[in-house]
Image 1: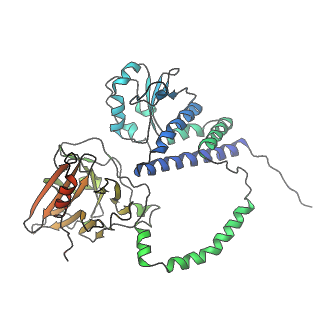
Image 2: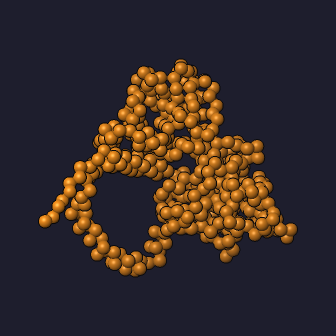
Length: 437
């Protein structure tokens, strides 16, 4: 005789299932907001504002509404709750500068007795909570409790009763996800699919083996993941600031299939590192570079066209993070992100040449986009030179070094000049390859 014991799922089991679903969907939404933001596709940003309006009301019992529904083009505020005296900004950017810009808006004067909430919808807000913020209108704002992100929202949900978690689960299921099978049964279709996958696995390995070198190279050098360089808000008098967070080196976590950049080997461990970017010389101790720095003003202070360049020294190698834009359309076409490389636009950039002392990026027209090279002088001084061109919405900067005459010069061309592209193309021809033919 067989005995079957039927167990009714407990509230704690349901809580875990509801919470796991909520966490998964919020995490996926945050990832997609970040990725589409890199591609300048901002539809999710707009829809997420309405989604978080209802989510915050459901989770915290607020009564926020979209302020733009009754007041057009309000800066710094997206949501308002007149009952609980709250004004909220929903943002995919989590920088100190962003928060301070919001707090400085004149519109907030009329809400001095309200509490300002900053909602980070796609990134972690933990570091922001440690800052002191300029608050010119003295609106109520405590960073430790008034900066919210997905983690802090999930922490609150985790401790809610099962009935409340179920309501949140059902809301998220309606808004951004399909209904999950909450039973423990594995559908028969899933088993069938698994068997098919196993049968195909051997074929896929053979298919991968037969791929041409070009196809393998293309697949290895194109990746559209979470690769945006770090940003920093606080400038130091020397024109650089320290990275707020230690960069992730992707081969140390889950991206070990990404194309790896070696980094620039710094040979003399007992000397500082002279970093020359344009006409500016930065003399950096190894301690500074080991913490990571971000260069802010390497060319003319009035020229905004050099995007921030971040560098960090790790295991005697110098790694760089920099963004590349297309000269014709101004679109982002790729990144160097410390120890790996990504190309967004297939026909715009070539995979960089890289050895222990040099790294070079070229476009498909064989123009040099970016170079970084190392030299050790006869006195043992470490020298690092950076050249290339950098594009922003207002201008283009071109850094050129004449390795024969030892003369380095730079040019900033405003886009208000009707011939800026033609002038830039002529100057870019002067950026020489650091790999002799």
